Amino acid sequence: VTRSAFLEESYITPRDVLYVRNHGPVPAVAAEDADDHTLSLCAGSEEVAALSLHELRNRFETVQLTSILQCAGNRGADNLAANGVEGNGFVGLDAEFIGVGMLGNIRWGGFRLSDVVQTLMPESIKAGSHEDLHVTFEGLDGYYTSTPLSHIMNPATDCLLATEMNGEPLSPDHGFPLRVVLPGIAGARSVKWLSKLTIGPLSDDPWTRHYYRDKPSMTPIQALPMNSVILSPEPGSQV
Figure 1 (cartoon, helix red, strand yellow):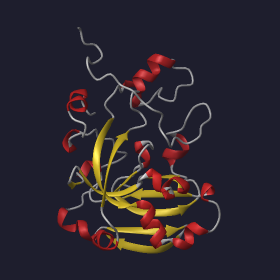
Figure 2 (cartoon, rainbow, N blue to C red):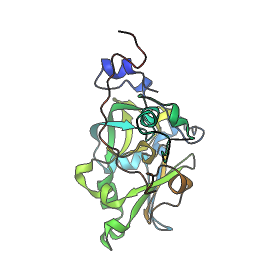
Figure 3 (tube, one colour):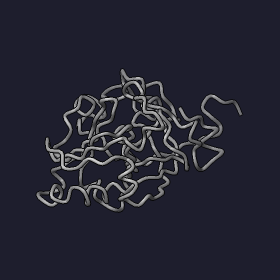
């Protein structure tokens, strides 16, 4: 977790203290191979483009974005204490032991996701309603999940294909060499070690089918609610 002391002392969370949450082993990508890392862009089962990280840098403007990254399980223990266990989605998960700390505020660097999709997949986004389509992101670790295309294509949401955090390359634990950053959306949708992007229906991945869903509606969690935290004194402290 990101310790409260680090959240309190700096508006920007240092790169090396940001919480880590993975769904599998961290893929090994050597620094010297980063420029050759390839992102495949697909419409359904058809690949419409494939660009290396070097090609993405040459074709798209690099922009900076300061945004909080927050795990959907952040403050799971607080939720259970406030709302009880009946019907609570945190019951039985490791999140039931998590207080504050599964979040951090980072200065990300990368390419506007809407620009990349608009430029490389114009035919895929002009037909039909955006509301019926999702963008599925898949990482080198095999984890994949989706977010509505309407959110991705809204310029106000500032969605990013990120290569940097706080002016440095992404760390291996945080998605080196390429990850998605979706401000305001549960961290589980910001896929790390990104290798594939697909426009199509809602993802059928097990994490969407069985986890990261609101209860009792069971709709997939996307946007996270506003959250306010007292960082000092920490819970359990005597004052």
